[in-house]
Amino acid sequence: MSNMESSTKEIKLNDLEDEPGTNETKETNTDEEGSMGFTSINEIWRNVIILTASFLFLFTAFASLQQLQPSLFVEDGMGAIVLAVVYGFFFLSTLLFSASLIAAVGCKWSLAIAITCYTGFMAAHFYATWGLFVPAAVFVGLGAAPLWVAKAHYLNLAAHDYSKLKGITEDAAASLFFGFFFFFFQSSSIWGNIIPSQVLIPVADNSSPEILSYTSNNQDSLAQCGRNFCPQYADFNNTNLLQPPKSQLYMLAGIYTSSACIAFIVVLFLQQLPSEVNRKSSCWNRLDPKELFSTLRHLKDRRQLLLIPITIYVGMEQGFFISDYLQAYITCPLGKQWVGYVAICYGVVDAISAAFFGKLAQFTGRVPIMVLGLLSHLSLAVALLYVNTSDLKTYVYFMIAGFWGMGDAIWSTNFSAFYGVLFKENSKAGFANFRMWQAVGSILSFGYQSKLCLLVKVYILIGMLIVGFVGYIAVEVLEKRKSITTSQ
Image (cartoon, rainbow, N blue to C red; front, side):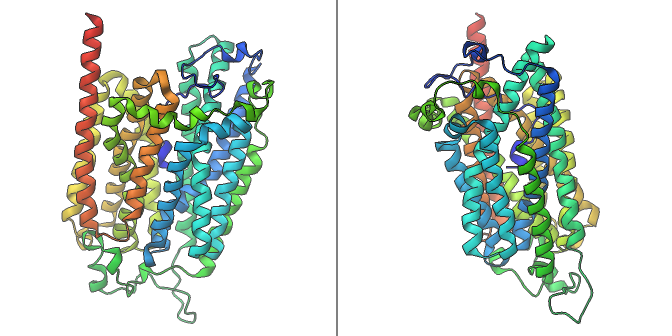
């Protein structure tokens, strides 16, 4: 969900207003329906800013809370399992009804419904129990796919109208709007992670049993961090792994829930797309049962099948950073108050790298950038197999997070663009498959987080990276042969 959208080269979705069963892009669909679309540049920018501001407030809360979840609730693996539930239902939402919901109620109200689901998840942290967390996670998962698809659809149609009004290409307009959106969206990782860094500060006060000293750990406890960390055998004599005082949890929940409420209020000012307002037929009549299975039908394309392993890896590596690196290498040896600072480093490098490598790929081509992504994550994974936390200086934790963010930016940026190039004739189904298989990777990563030791998870990650990259290269070869055959 936050790291799942880290590219200014996001795939352009086909217009969800296409006639049922039609996958081809129709640049003139709004005109065909008697709608002129947005009528002024100021109108377009106003709505793009409102949409961006809403996401900024929402993910200032959710992205930070997602990264904290495994570290806040270590016992019984509740934090990671709850995230696995989120991504499990995100998978179902992507597969079954995200496009249909948007066709039924439009982008604006799909966004409002989804934000409400996220707000409930934030509020659940006031009473962090299985019985409340799991239902809240289900609703977040169901709302996540419509949220992201509606956002992409809205920006794409805004870019379409903007390009006509300004006399520029639609690609240039889309790059402008997605670049603007992601510049502010990625900054949510900074604002969101400043909050726990200030709230979760340990207080040395022996008068209250709730106040913990995160530094009162012996060497035996700290030796079980890093490469030796096993969540199922976690040493709770290490106070870094204990749940923070309730007063701190309440403060976090209050701040994050308030931020999500502001996001909901902001999105209410978003203008409905003119094509949705002027559509004469009943919105429910626009539901097409064929849409529910278009994602599965797309799997007939062998290129999609070859890309499944590397797409799963993208979800796994993001889940690994959130649930394993931050827990085993940051929370365990340093304390929860450091999680926010390290996550800020990761987010900043991720955002800068997404913009930099997206631009660089125009000059070097896609493959060299992908090879750099392979080498960065492969070398970091191998290093995690051997380094001990007792041997590391604090700045090294930040360096590892930064380089991991660089690799993630390469995968997210280039694979979003690659899916768009490969499946431009059926981009809705291609984009849905990208999100769906990425969600599978997150489900796996969060699902086994509390059951396997860190070393085992690193080996799994390395294996999936190698297998996935081989599949990606196979697709590149197929496309190269296709282009040669076409040119002859």
